[in-house]
Length: 381
Image (tube, rainbow, N blue to C red; front, top):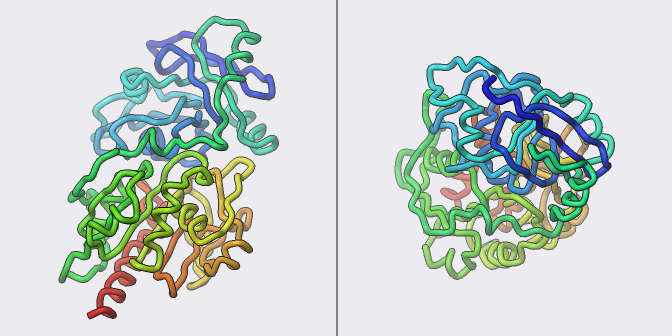
């Protein structure tokens, strides 16, 4: 390994974790979480939903297949820092264009390996996600602890405005079909969907294109009037980072369109729809982050393995009082993973059916959304 500098992680509980720097020199602060995915580290690194967080990978070996531009969910990393047990010294994949270490250094991401990620994960599960500082500096632990106090909490922060693309985009790119399942969609017509970008993963837009939509992307602060001015057949609300309870502009825009156009929300979009309906949202102890979360679809009885990345959830009883039907449950902890309303022509899931590299159990939700939009369009003819 070309980089043998020491790095340290200091947690809010005062514990210090030492290892080797495998990324850029410097210091990064944020909420420390763990991700249980076995593959997809580049998609995780470039997922805007990780803004303000330091991600611990539980898979002990990371970097073995390198990186490449096609697997990016955004044009650059958004996480604050990366923690792994061991960075692979061998990069072996025909699609790789750059090693993970070179990628991290080029994008100035502070990262560490050589520490016990199993013990760290057990601590986060026991005590909950907590603030941390990841550094290559030689300052004392006491100095780092003072700087840790200055790291802002994730609760109460609007991080969406830091990651939204901030402009109107006509998105036409679909997914790489070599690595993506086919969707069975009508060949006639391309209904227009306005996709709200709260820090959306690119594969969401690609999946909407494959489902046969004309996709118009609008920035996070677009109002209900802005959305309706596009004359959409449907509206989509994307994933994104931070605390959904402070995104009043997004909630008001969703409330102004809900019931007027078919609507589909994923992750943060799911929470925004819940708030727009009058449901409550609460913070989870350590969240759901990984590509192996079991979810039961209550409408079919099937269990699907899903990819997830969220630290907040919709409170079920408040969602029912607001008129939503609970459609999906997390089998690990029973939290709400999906809801719908036939009256409002709305569907929403807390997980990621567009997950790249996978699993692909839930990609059918995009065709379910397309069918809902086609039925609504036919009803007004």
